[in-house]
Image (cartoon, rainbow, N blue to C red; front, side, top):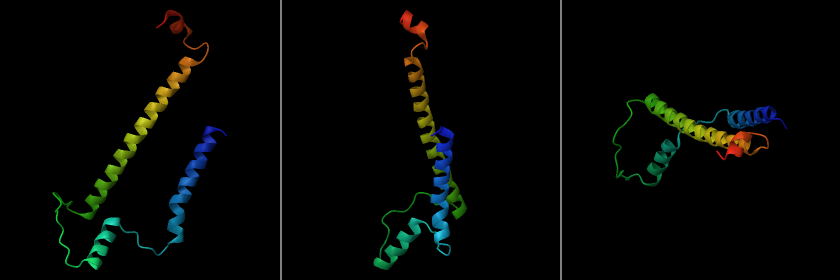
Length: 110
């Protein structure tokens, strides 16, 4: 299977995995895990006092979402960079090991 077809197939699968749950649960509330955990703690231990306060609270929910999205984008960029870097290194290694490639370097021992 060609690489372009594989990529299109993978993109299609990712889109199906992202959209299918939204279509199955049209009336669902999509909240964060922190909010659900706080609600559950309030039900289980109404007298619970947090033992740690955050050093800094974002001024609004939008800023908090922006910082979360920025963190996710930086993480994805970091992972993508290293995957591309190692693929590039491996590609150069394969080219050097092919017969007839860079023959001048092999003959001179460079």
